[in-house]
Image 1 (cartoon, rainbow, N blue to C red):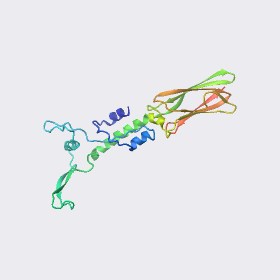
Image 2: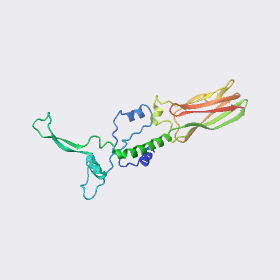
Image 3: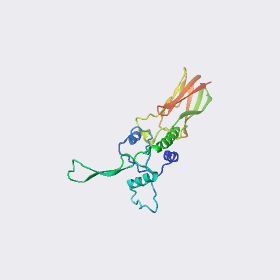
Length: 238
């Protein structure tokens, strides 16, 4: 889902294979910290299909593709002519330096930076809008006699993404969602847990909670975790 949103917003195609290495930042963020983690090169040289005047780039050589793309875009500072130099490590031998200029294959030309930055900003804003958002909805109370009230409420995630990744549910670092009842004077929980921890709530999903409470007056239901925000609701026990 995140990949589809990225491709749709940024519009780049034929991305290079991921260069992720074991223990890098993105993998640490997921496997240790329990967070959903995404990475992108940000920009890469578009693939040049070529025409009848070009020799087929059968092995998909990156340098060949870059040189063709740079020429197609009319760039002028991407290649340094090979020049003979005197190198102290190779006395009496012919040494030349030159070729594709440093970092030119990694970074877009200055004329393209604004467009690349704008599209990536739009994607980040869209991704932020998918984040989990805990709410307490469909609150209902029912008097059941003998001074007791049944309370039901849905713990709802209004975001598109789950509150916890699968690794996050196993991580001791990422806190579970804490749901607690803050009782008033003379109130007592007859059924249900005053404090409970929820492992995860999926995107646009909910979990129903219920208690049986004895007493009168107001009480408060609180729910939340540091990474999903907090919600509260006040209940009047008549």
